Length: 384
Image 1 (spheres, rainbow, N blue to C red):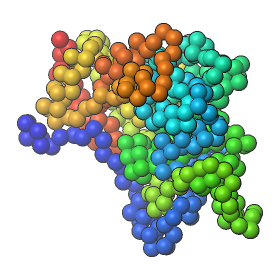
Image 2: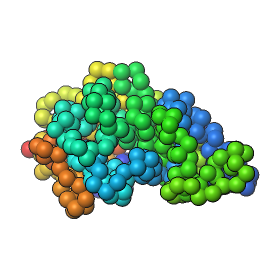
Image 3: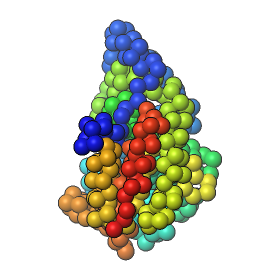
């Protein structure tokens, strides 16, 4: 409880879907708990139906899916990968681990996505790929980014940790890049505690991706009866999640529409009922461009400055609502300075929004009463 005596509304509560506990028990009692079991097959099929991916491989995290993409690109020390500075550090870590140089570009002031207008200036003769991050599940400008990548012969990787169920120009997010990383961390719309997936839209990458995921062996082909023994044939690591986690994920994916309905309802209440307050106080709400359909992954506000952002978070906490800021810029972080470089023009928008952004509680089980409490708390804050 907080000072008001009310139970605090947390920033996030993982949803427990209808069959989750039954599936977990079934996975354990079946005594098939390693990777690539029956629930892995079911979860993978559901994921492909949602995303339209040619192939989907469950991984232990979105971070590991990104690491697999770096291995499949055959990156070498000194190769460059352009990405937003406004993202989670895993986006950069995956490529820095291969010796590649993350090149940090600025974000757009409206969607907070990678600013496609700055990409041309960031490309050099060492550039190998562009990683897009669909912030809050709002699609990046994939038409422009895709055309630029084709002209320069660059791979496009989607970090779609926020975007499962989102669309850009009527195409699912995750279907644009040659590879896409998904997250099923407990903070995501669909979760299994820790987990992820690599979606493959390039048929030429599928066989090698299976090998990289299975410790560099052709073990998957062995289990399918395509070879009489499996051997070490490439570099790789152990990226398979347990079938127990896949059981939990299966239940979550089966409940996807129900989860999305609840989150969308909460998102739209925030957006509509805070509009007048935001306009009166100079607070920016999320921008959703035409042609983009977002999955209600998070709801954020942009306060006028850092002082107001911090005061606003404290104001909500005093009234029993937990809010949070988000990414800190990677381009001027200690590791970013050591392993990466900043694209021409710097990242002034990233630096500004990182100081101003605050996320409100949003989860599938946030009921109307809880939403009303958060909205009322927000409305009582006056920007100084």
